[in-house]
Structures are given as structure tokens and as C-alpha cells.
Image (cartoon, rainbow, N blue to C red):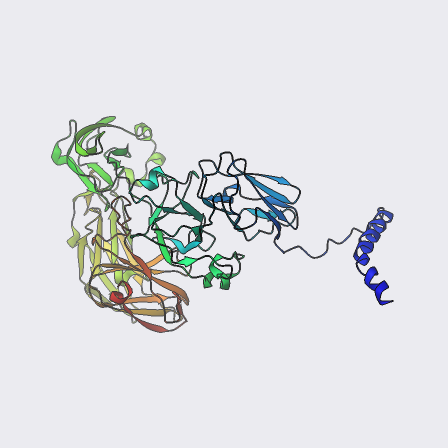
Length: 598
């Protein structure tokens, strides 16, 4: 009886399947639809490989790699079928039943170790469950290289991981290699910005990462970002089946993905163009125009507008000196076409900067030629010196009142501005203010009260009419702005005691998503920074080392081997970089910047 059951048991599943088939045909006309059963959430599994992992002497001509799965699959992203080292033409594929066949248009190199990675490439045919990936290593020679390196690629400003970056190794140590050659080993970063370049030789390399927009495995400075490691790298770890860093994980497995060790951190940046020339120009008003340059820090010897006296021209560079605003200080009507001449240092055909005079035609916008005869066609800016005043309750203590005119002023009477406040008893007091012109914007002025702001008080800044005249010959209207400090009792305050400040640093308070800067301080000495009136929530502190002390975050330069200015997020003792701020709380944190950037 026992032997009979042993023979019968293997036949039971077959019988059930056949029975269900017969039964389904007999019930074909039933009005009750079959239930689909539970949704398939299991990703595909490889059942068979050809060649086997670690195979040597693989033919270089008409090479096929075969991956047979336990179910029907589709290729979701052909670009993610990635061969290392890359060939001139990307791998091709075709499906045969449940088998994915990879082939190549060109012959492989002899005596070389290759790896083929399927991460982010394959999903099952029905539910779209992504295959975690597999890295097949084989050799066309007698040996299989067995070393590996790991790391992470992140954005230089946000430190967020970059998915899909191409990480590359070069034996050629020349600066031009990444522009001209394909790497000797390469790989793609996953959702966590993580990379593992495996089965590589035990030798020294230069390490790069790029956002390979055209998939040619070379760096194009015009369209792509780049990262590089400062010194040469040499692998110290050997490939073994038990190494967690070599395994493929579902990207939703947060703990496993974050537990992987990284040896190198690469910060992606967009290089500023090195070729200097005038890139764009436009006349945006009767007396207003701008020109932009391809590279920053343009060097202008002189500029003039034909027929316009030199003392009637007002100019202003932006902070990067790659955009120049131009105004004509003359209320008289200007010609339909202005001829601007710029004598500046332009990149010549040999790549050197040399003096060059360029003439630019600035044509008046068509809408300015339309006569505005009807009263309804005339806008406020057609007769008035337009300006704005901003004073945000949360930031007014730090930033003051900001007055910005649309056009430069030719007459001003800042002593006519009055400032007063009402205490909670509605008693009025007049007070004094200081006024400074913004060093980067000649149309912006900062007004700061000499007395400290107090909660419960109402503050008024009054700008009387006809006291300021702009280059159009127009006078301003009067305006009074009122501001009070936030009185929401649920708001909290964050205090940062900054120490070890031996350079200039930009300190940003960011929201939980790290996509919005809420407050900014620029410091160059030890001090305590206050961030009042914050809602309950999570915040992060981003600190940038402003090496050249220009108040902005500068990018890197590959050929000069200059990294972008270093950015770090302040981390708590538990390793997180979020400060969780409850309601009605005052939290203080001590930050040793010198230790952070050591």
C-alpha cells in the first residue's frame, strides 16, 4: 500500500491540472466569472544560465548569453542591460519563450573578463514585478578577474543619491581619457545611488561617474554631470558569494540596501562652460536690456551704446558675472534699434582668452511700439516708479524690510521714510531705521529698525510719494507696510551654537523633503544662529564650505581637478540628519563645524 501511494502522489498535481482543464471546458457558458486568485507579487527567478558564472574561454564571435526564467518576462529598459567593459554598441536582446537571449553586434575582446548586469532591466510579463537583477561574470581568456569596489553617487548640493549614473574605471590616468575613451570597467547605480564594480583587475584606476545622457559611456561636458575621486583607487576586496555588497536586493528592502558598505563617495556636479563668449542678448524695455555669457566671471574692458553718452549707461553684473543688466539713464524716447558694443575677453579658436569687440543689435520689443491711447491700456508702470516692499513676519528680524525698485533710481530721499510701532496698548512710538543698498543689486535696499522687534507689537514702514525718481523720469506712489511677529503659541525655536568656524560657511535650514531653503545665514566666526517661529516638524541643517568666500555654492572643474565646494548635513548622535521639532519648544544644538569638515 505504501509503495502504491508513493507512485500515486507525483501524479496527483497532474491529475488536478487536467481535471481543472476538463472542468473549465464543461463550465464555459457559466455566468460566474472565475476569480483571478491572489495578485502575483513575486519577481521572476532565473532557472538556468548560459554560460555558467565564471566560465572561461567564452567565444568572442557571435557570443550569446542566455537567461531562462521561471515565468514569461519582458525587458522594461533595454539601456539597463549593461555590459562591462562597455562596447561601442550596446548589447542587443531577443526573447525565446521564457529565455532572454543577449547578443552583440561586434566581437568581444580576447583575454578579457566581462560582466553583464540586468538590474532594472527585466520584469515579469503579467504583473510587472521587477527582477532584482543579476550580474553574470565570464572571461574570453584563461582567467576571471576577481576584485571589486563599492561606493555611492550623490548630488553635490543635496547629497541625494543619483539613480542610473554610470560609474567608470580607467587605467589611463590622463585627464582626457574620460572624454575620449570608453572605460575598462563600468556599472550603473541603483535607486540608492549604490554601485559595485565587480570582477575587475587588481591594479590602479581613476574613478569617475557621469550622467550618461547619450549612452556612449564617455563624458560630454555640455550636457552631462560628472564626479571624480581625487586620488587613484585600487581594489582591496575579492569577489565571494557570501559578500552582501555583491548581492542583488529589491530596492524596497530598505534595511538591506542601507546596510551595504561603501568605499567611495562621488559627488556629481555640472561643470560651468570653459569657453567664454556672449551667449544671449535681449532688449526687454525702452531703456533696459541684458546680455549673458557662456562662462562665469566674464571680463569686460568697456562697453558703449552708439549715440548714448557713456555717463548715461548703468550696468550691473549678477553674482556669477555671467549676466549683465544694462539701463539707459535718459527718459527721452530711444531708437527702435540700439547698437551695443562690448570689448571683452573672448575664447579664440586656440582656446585662449583674447580681447574682442562684439557689436550687438538690441531691437525694441514690438509691444512697446503699440501706442497706448486709451486709459485702460495704460498700466501703472507706464507712469510710476514701480517698487515692492517685502517683510515676512517669520524673517523680518533677520532680513528687515526689503525695498526693490524695478528700475535704477536717479533721485532718492531715503530720509523721508518713516517708521513707527504700536505696543499692545495701541500707544504709538516713532523710531529710527538704517538703510543700506544691497551690494549685489543696486535696485534693492535693506531697511532695519534700530530697536529690537517685540511680540505683540505692530510695526509700520511708510514710504511717501514723489520722493524717488527712476531712469524713466517717473516718481513713486506712497506705500505703507505693516508687519507683526507671529503670535501662534504652537511655534517653536531652533538655536544652533556654531563653533570651530575658521572659514566662511553657508548655513541653510531646509524642510523635511530637503527641497526648500527656509532660512539662510552666512557666517565666518563662532556664533549662535536663531531660527524662530518654526512649525512642528522635521528640519535639516545643510552647511556649505564657501572656500572662495563669494557667498554662493561653486561647482567643480574636472580638468583642473577641482571638486565642488563641500556640502554636509548636520547629523545627530543617532546618525540621522533630521531635527524633529515639537510644538512650543526651544531646542538648542551645538555644531562643531571644524570637526565636521576635518
